[in-house]
Image (cartoon, rainbow, N blue to C red; front, side, top):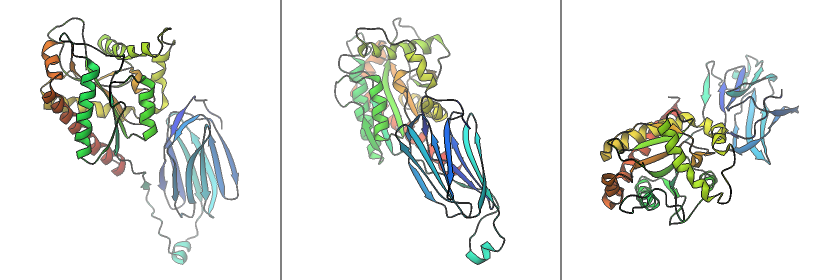
Length: 364
């Protein structure tokens, strides 16, 4: 019954599959999980240990096998309550690496449908929790005493990031989306506080805005690239991550960054859950922004960005051109280009929104 002890994970609403004599409740998590169960009076209570966040959920199924289900958070635990139907006589739990599933079975009399007029399909019916992109958090990178990269003409990355973020907020709000900025003026905010803010407002998508930089100006020191959180594969990806993660020095001014803090983000359970969606968001943004702005397409990339750590939604970081390259510095400090790239990013987000909602709500 007891699996691997996890430091934290996110308990999202389950997928529920209903057959005539079987109901399967599945949670997609990184496991196996540590849990305890209690069975009494047609009720199964399961307590999951080490739950960092719970998306509360309840449903009245009125099925002869499973009458209702609810999930809530209590302290550091996730509490799953299954109210069994009168014909449930057996249950089985599968605690696997990628999912936690409960199978409920029973024998329903053939006369039940006629007497109670209960229509239970013979084939599998999938009851999905509706997931939509409604709330978006835009993170203007750097700020305050952390200027970020600085161009040859003195353009500060923190200023470009904030300007584009404000334009992007307006573009997305025109489309009826609820948008928050992690900072609305030139203030310093720790990297961890940015994603905590996104989680607190219940963000459905998190986007961190940045400008790229290179000590040596070459023919390839130009263009846009979008990152999602994963292990860096190239020296360049590691270098860009190191550049953005350097903001940690402002959080630990009198000591070095704690050992393993960067590596630890790759073990984050929440981000692992949203890895594929983050990768898809990065892919769509990369193509859309490059095409609509004329910036060179440097390709979708992956690396260990601390600011993406622990975000309970699809999350990416975009490098909007090289502020250290004279030609792109001129563009990035231009209001007209800032508006242009904001519109391109907004279009990419809307394309992802369409893909996301179709995939999650229609099984595609």
